[in-house]
Amino acid sequence: MPRLTNQEAETRRIALVRAAFILRKPWLASTGPRTVAGKRATAQNRLSHGADSLAFKAAMAYCDAVGAALVSLIE
Image 1 (cartoon, rainbow, N blue to C red):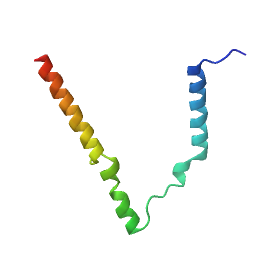
Image 2: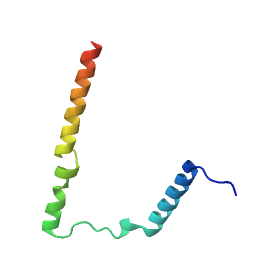
Image 3: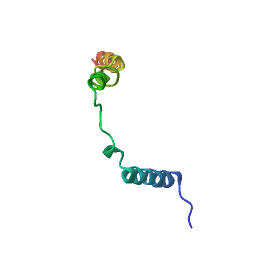
């Protein structure tokens, strides 16, 4: 049997992980928050994980600054 390259081995491993994930179907057990307090808490996830997070805003400000610097170099 021929030896697999690293790329082929990684591709096969990813395929096996995907197949196992699909067979397990974790999305069927996901119900989301049920209590008012839980719903209120999950509604705030956008502040730490989404486009309203400080990390995202800092990254966008950095990208804007780099873009402005590049534009000034071109002009």
